[in-house]
Length: 238
Ligand code: C5P
Image (cartoon, rainbow, N blue to C red; front, side, top):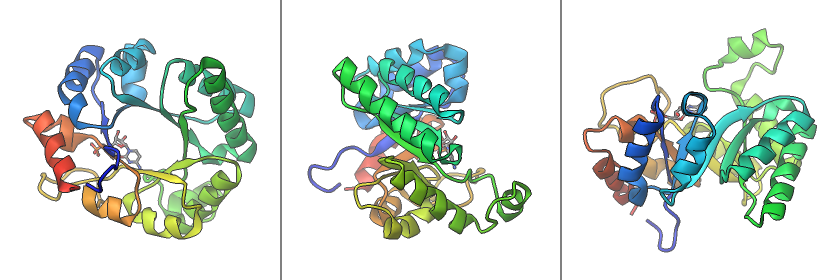
């Protein structure tokens, strides 16, 4: 790992219950930089899970992908800041006004609470959508072009970070401000049995391409020894 670099591993707590999530979080907290809480865990365990995971000392990435009118998204973002999330997601397809409202709510709520503003991350095109799916929506059918269009709008709307697939990092780095934080899932070491992630990079490849954070789920939580798996991934970045 480059000297002084933060630990870029965000371990996805993709488990069903608070008990499972907290057991995993306590075990691997020293080896990761943050935990991702997604829709399943948040919906089953409730908002309290954010505070309980924060109690392990790690940062929390609340991945609820807000998409609504600007006023509603702003209020949801403010609530996430009060829960003490350090990163959260919104859909860039909600539009520029929605993104500006989200970023402003993050900054203002954090200021009032005496915290650092969380990183509001824009999601561009879901990786489950292909050219046909985009055309069905009446969108630009070229996935790469649509990703670039939404990413450019996100930057112009004041967002300081984006979620992107590993294979989008290089193209996005060419068109985005250098300070834009890129968070990427789809990370595999190449040694695990096949699963549903098709377009993957190794942790090292993704960092070298320009990612700032790596979202890693199954390679850690489904490993026989999750803590050792996280430590192994971290050492692969050295
Ligand atoms: O288990 P795995 O490493 O594939 O988990 C990746 C995590 O990143 C999951 O929480 C998944 O929902 C999320 N994610 C993804 N691909 C995207 C967006 C999010 O895998 N395009």
